[in-house]
Image 1 (cartoon, rainbow, N blue to C red):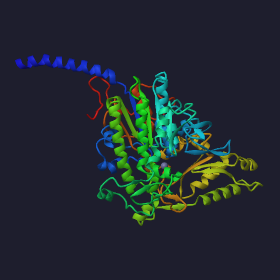
Image 2 (image 1 turned 120 degrees about the vertical axis):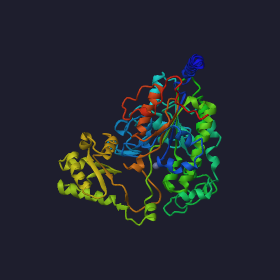
Image 3 (image 1 turned 45 degrees about the horizontal axis):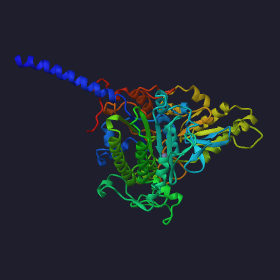
Image 4 (image 1 turned 180 degrees about the horizontal axis):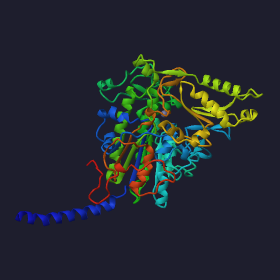
Length: 564
Ligand SMILES: [Zn+2]
């Protein structure tokens, strides 16, 4: 008995000491000093599982040892870059944030509008029309972070693509940079001039330094047996890359730098290397995470998207791109650990959309006649004739003012001439479309407004609908139906799981590691970050707080696993 009595007070002393020590350290690390949101353009969740055995310990695996959401899907119809990036830090879909597609038809101007165009802004660092979030009708987590800290927090957003930099930056970003040929540029929306350190980075010639580089396989030959053959006829390999390894990075002209050099660079892992170099320079120059307040850095790597489009998700190139992305991330995480300290960081890794298999890849490996073709011209002709038969009128001009993707704008002069409303004509068009085998759904404006979704497809259509930017009729093509003849290369953008199911992982201060198989979405990032950092939600929230992955904040129960 005696030893127990002697031990007990000792245990109390140890417990109190632990509480005092952990309280002291928790006071420093309750909120992260730096939130890092990494987006990989076109990165389906399944890449993590399929390529995992080729990953090292410090890149994707660092994130995979955090909170991993295995069923994160976009609940919108337009699974492309602009809409995806508009969701990631706003926690809202196009119905609220207005980014319905990468570009849409503007009826009042009778022209297509690019999602981040801004005719009142100028580029910084190059010439031409500027970019801004003027068409983005939401606010982001970063905006709320800035407001909540009386604008002491810095919000910086970087990407190879303008829309992938501008949209996560929100309205109040301090600095937004993207690639334009040989330099990183910004816009007068954000500032009057590029910061001197960006000018120095541009003057270093980093982007042009890859001219003549060669993209070779980074793994032993046997590793590539898991994927498709290298020389597949349905790969694109444009801009001088060719279909097989090794891929020269020089564009179509071997002797001098032309615009196609920059396309080739982006369609290779070197496009991601360039952006990672800029991201590191940003952290150092802007002293992110070292200013006594939470800063936000968003970095969106576009090269996985270009490689995926050109070579497809089952290509040797995509495997190699993922492996090199893993090494780039590992290097970036190690850099952040040295500069800021991992325990001061909160990391998110996600993607703006997935990708569907190249149709010819499916045909090459299976004789099953699953891929079917439709003709958009045939559908348009059928719409014209059904409307003319139903609503006779004198004029013979088209009933359709504009069609892009699954959005159809009816001609207002034609409607007026036939004394019919867009809704009446739209219902006739929907009936026709729904009778066709390639169409999965079709709605008029009124139907979408009144819709109480009973399926994921209906929910996606409604989330992608914005009154002044969507058509009078909105419809969707069934999976495995492709327009025209099979082109080489892969694509995405449809309301299907392969395009909607993406990587989503959190790691760092306040995150409870684990595999989470419940329903989740990139729309959940903003509310979850808000909760983890004590920031007010964005005004119109459509995502949820991922409470299952939020660790206890009590002293001594810090859930962060720092990897040390
Ligand atoms: Zn894409």
